[in-house]
Image 1 (cartoon, helix red, strand yellow):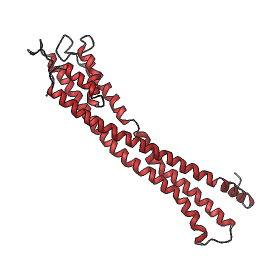
Image 2 (image 1 turned 180 degrees about the vertical axis):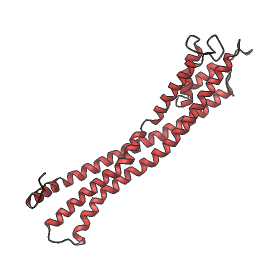
Image 3 (image 1 turned 90 degrees about the vertical axis):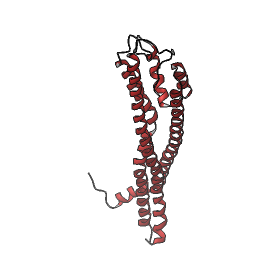
Image 4 (image 1 turned 60 degrees about the horizontal axis):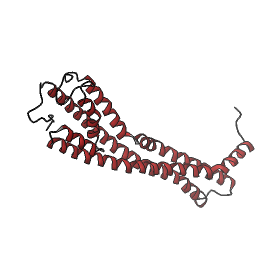
Amino acid sequence: MVALTGHGLQDLLAILAHFGTIVQLVVLATLALASVGSWAIILHKVRLFRRAQRDSQRFLRAMQTGEDLAFVAAAARRFAASPLARLFRAVHHQLETPSRGPRLDGGPAAADLDPLRQTLRQAQAEELVRLERGLPFLATTASAAPFVGLFGTVWGIMQAFHAIGKGSGASLAVVGPGISEALIATAAGLAAAIPAVVAYNHFLHRLRRWEGELEHFAAELVLLAERAGQRATLPATGRSPLPR
């Protein structure tokens, strides 16, 4: 590789100087888009988790106060934002169909719980994927935005020093404006990264809590099916037993 010296290096710096403003604009535009995308995801996830919590509380109250399976199924359809209700809806058809798995009201297939467990695992995975959607973008923004901003700052400083080399002085009045403009990129990178990393950690904590709640609720449904499978006939009320 041939080393660049003398006029060759000056020509390269002159070429880079022409692209300095364009690079800065691209860096700032990229960080602006990342910031807008992060805030859109943050607002959407706040509404999503809030609705999920509210509908789950309402669905659990409906499940505790009603012993009729059809009533609970209707409540699950009404509170569609609840991951628990969506989990119940995912297995409801299987629970009601003897040929596909156990039934909550007992039946010949009540002892075979493997299809139910498989359906529950699949439904849990789908709900976690739905709740997790958008978090990878926040993680990417949190980790990459500071480096993108640093790249813009380094590029701006290179341009500022090239301008100093072409001028006649290197006083603070000459260096200051170029350095301050270059540091804008770092500030923009931090402005995009800090909300993203805070939101990502918060939503990841909420996601882990939902993972535990879904696991607990799935275990309750399996236990319910096991208890129902031990009964030879329906209860005297003609209603399917539900956990209280």
